[in-house]
Amino acid sequence: MLAALTPIANPVFDWHALAPDIILVVTIAAVLVADLIVPDRDAWQSSRIASIGVLAALVPVITLAASGHDRYMFGGAYAVDHYAIALKGFFLVATYITILISVDYVGEGDYYKGEFYVLLLTSAFGMSIMASARDLITLFVALETISIPTFILAAFRKHDRDSNEAGVKYYLIGVLSSALMLYGMSFIYGVTGSTKLSEISAYVASHGSTALLTVAVFLSLIGFAFKVSAVPFHFWAPDTYEGAPTPVTAFLSVASKAGGFVALINIIYFGFYGTDGSGAHAWWAAVWALAALSMTFGNLAALRQTNIVRMLAYSSIAQGGFMLVPFAAAGIAGADGRTGIAATAMAAVVIYLLVYGAMNLGAFGIVIAVARRTRSGEISSYSGLFQTSPVLAVTMTAFMASLAGVPIFAGWFAKFVMFRAIIEAGTGWGVTLAVIAALNSVIAFFYYFGVVRKMWFGEPAEGDRTAIVVPPALAGAIALMTAVVVVIGVYPQLFARIGERAF
Image (tube, rainbow, N blue to C red; front, side, top):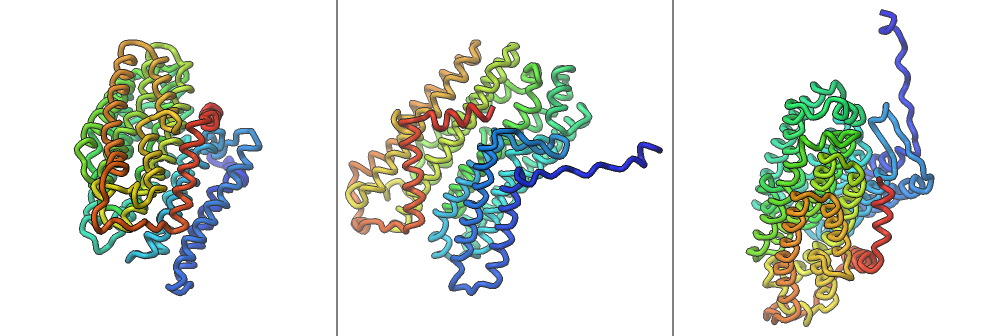
């Protein structure tokens, strides 16, 4: 009775730590209000307000990084540490680039402009919360805040049957994955008695991987596998990527996918791994299989594609498989009693996400630019691009080479940290996965450089001999991503430090 009468302490709010999220919420409200009161001819103001808000949210991210100390709120359920700060910055930059590549695409189409940016920012807000989530409930709410706006964005071409189909498929699969994930999380709470990842980690370390906990972890991983389009839970991705508006596809393939991987890092590294790595017995084999299947199927399916968006969709599945390799490395080592590799492996995932974001957003920027002239997503429409628009051909070559992992472009460093993690894991399973990853890296060259061959050695079609005019916002996004891909390829220590400081 006395305990019931004890006053509940008010939660402590660190307004500096919450500033990026607060600014995003204020920006969402501002865009929504502006869309109601600004005349339709000035609807481009929505994109301007959205971009200013996202850049403003980056300011406290920079000051938090400069402060140098970790902050925890709500009993440890919300953390703003180096890891969270790095990923908040990544999500904000990815959202800003998406806004840049969307401005003319949305402005020239039959779209609800204000709603587009409201939904985009709402999804970005969920990503920012996800980076700080250290509790199952917070993590689930953040993941749904990411997903629900993207269901609508995928079907945003309201008079396009393919877009409508893309939205419905994405929605149905997303709901199923959420149900499985939540079902698994309910078991985790039932077994451990807590939703906090730190307490789940302590339980795993003291009790080991029980049968029921293994089932719970497996169900949760299935839900996350849908979110990151890992094989065999990938079947929504190609149709959704092709049917959705291209800027939305770019956002789904980078920011939304990264949100799923961040959720995986949170729940595996901070929860299921255990303080001594003993929890890895419950999940490492499943992650190993997901990585091997995603790399292999994604690359083999990409070889057969004639549409560049579908090719990039299967490429995204394959790249997701490469990102799962460090998870498997951490699990293999943890199950063997070697916990030292876990932080290195998770840093490899973060570095890969940063690099992948730059090269994939840049590639989709070129796709949007070329489609402005050809009105086609067929790879054949890139034939002779070097003759008509040499700058676009050179930049697309850089992005394709980076995705393939060619040295001097950023992609090679992402592959390097991935291979380093799995080789350090050792054991026959680790070496086997490393071999599979190496073979798939070779396969990827064929379809990435198939596009390059078309651009440099093909002949342009009769109606495609004029130079492509790239709008300033889109040109700026492409230039920025090109600079990142080249600079990180030459000086990878910039991203290496971010990954190392995160853990």
